[in-house]
Length: 398
Image 1 (spheres, rainbow, N blue to C red):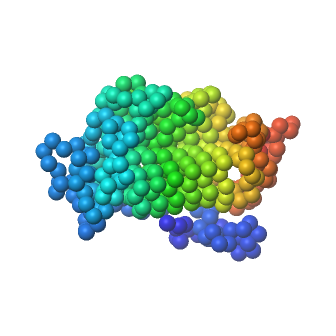
Image 2 (cartoon, rainbow, N blue to C red):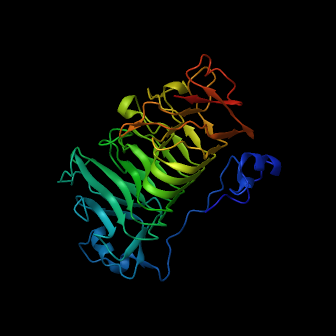
Image 3 (cartoon, rainbow, N blue to C red):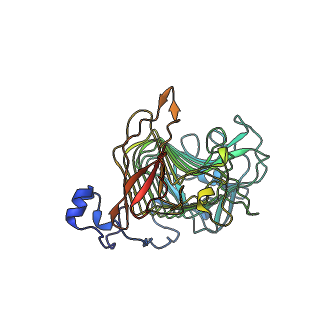
């Protein structure tokens, strides 16, 4: 996937060359509305097999997936597809690939009314620190596919759990997913941090056209970080909305090469301390890092909006104890107000960030382009840092 060729250019070639845009589809930068692809229909063909053709009376979803052969992808009609407890694979509700349904390369549903879940209050084991496991894990499957279904979460005897885990699956494709309280967590850092979708040691994974909602059926926020990439390369995220979480944020930890396009977030955290969160978090990651048209609405204390939380999260966080970050580019963001009287776009460089005794090494400010203009940097904690024109400056906060 790439930038939509139908977007009109905002930059001439001379400006694009000066900004370093040539070579990353500069003609696409500057659009404000994404043209998403049409919602898919249930696929057919030799690489797919229907649930109805494998189901035997009494089967749960894992049992049906276990019958898939030939590296095919299991397709589901609308309806509920459940398992009890986290007892497949390694503390998984459903497991595909290594340690599970070895020849099932993925699952594709028929839309949001295809609902997958671990049944409520069926968790019986604690993996440690009141963690029950993962609802759906795909492991060791190059080119795995998860698409066009809802992953729903339920209370699990007071334990937390993750949603989807993609582990050791290069080139996996995740699309048109809806998570509704798909994971449970209580903090923006371990052990309370869980992920709705966790991409682990899986290079070149793409997530697109998905919605991660942290609320349960009562409207209560119950999830931690919506999506995380961990210990991998070439992360790609398109047209995805993460919102109404209890704690946390979109996170890239130890990732080389990050590209997002039309990522939207709203209130992925709900308070201070463990319940806080930024718009996008980068830790121990390195470039190139490019975010195109991110919409980052933290909805915290700085936003001064009705119903906002006490979170003091900022729009972007950059932390790396190993090296400076010199290839960070943010094109045409939109945001709710950050610190200061004018509400500038706010980038956090936490001086206190420390790993194994080493402190944050980030010193180079990213390129931030807003309304066709490269924004200048306003340094905190200097007097008046937050009072400048947000169409000309972003705030750089230590």
